[in-house]
Amino acid sequence: MNDNLCFLNGEYLPLSKARISVLDRGFIFGDGIYEVTPVYGRRLFRFDEHLARLQRGLDKIRIANPATREQWLQRCRTLVGAVGNATGADDQVVYIQVTRGVAPRDHVMPEGLVPTAFMMSNPMKPVPAELRHQGASCITARDFRWQRADIKSTSLLGNVLARQMSADQGATETILFRDGFLTEASSSNVWIVKDGALLGPPKSELVLEGIRVELLRELCEEVGIAYNLRPITEADVRSADEVLLSSATKEVLAVTKIDGEVVGHGAMRGKPGPVYAQLYEAYQQAKLTMSI
Ligand code: PDD
Image 1: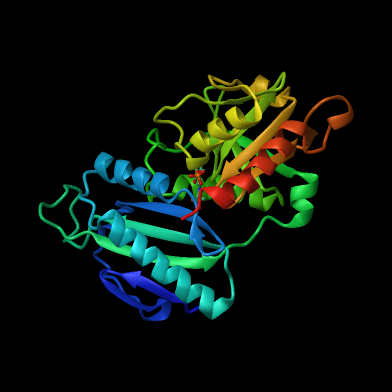
Image 2 (image 1 turned 180 degrees about the horizontal axis):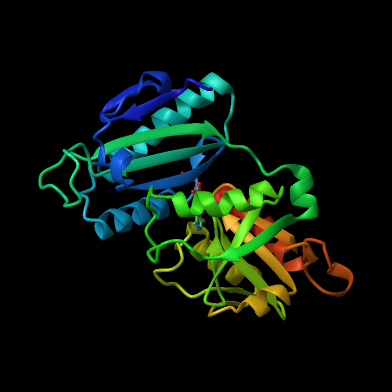
């Protein structure tokens, strides 16, 4: 295990030395919010968007933000610098977690708790070249998670169970349907391409608003691809021209097999398609201009 520098409640220390109380509500209840921000060339990608979502999550679960933007940014930079120097990795993934804090176990939210703030950064594991080239194989499942997937909560048991279903089959992701409609995947947003347009599910409490949801809207506008968020049925996914995943770590990734069936039509059947290729290219450009 790496022993890089991390941040816990005002202190920088090696991961192996970081300690929290067993009564931390993050440990007892999963009562917290987290954020995963990619770093390219030691610069934070879409940092303010990630921080804004952290703030929205804290507001939704009624935890006061324990730091200012400048403090979060400074801490991120300190960790990225330390991990970069220790590992040589200029591309990293910063993890931020805020929990409600430490208190005797009681479901009711105690007043006046000091939130626990934890941060670490890890070298980014890029998507393997073969997976990028061939596209991902995914399985599908019923979305059995709770109905507040919009909250980026550390209570991720539903997502963990969903992800393991695909891991058990050697697949990259588990695409989830609720009542016959696409929501997202265990740790990614899901997109389809129909007649050249990129389509994603509408914003709702059933789907996490990934930072790439708005980014892809901007990239589509830039390269002239139609973009629309609307309800997507299971049949739409299975008959799509292309299927894509997006997340902080996957960026955009083509899906070329779903439940063992090949995705797409004609010459592009089973291959990463043209809309994917355009968005992937645009994404690589965005890394250079949207990182601080
Ligand atoms: N996962 N939906 C879910 C359930 C997710 O967990 C994620 C990200 C996304 C994509 O969001 P974004 O574009 O902001 O990364 C959608 C992160 C990477 C994780 O939990 O590690």
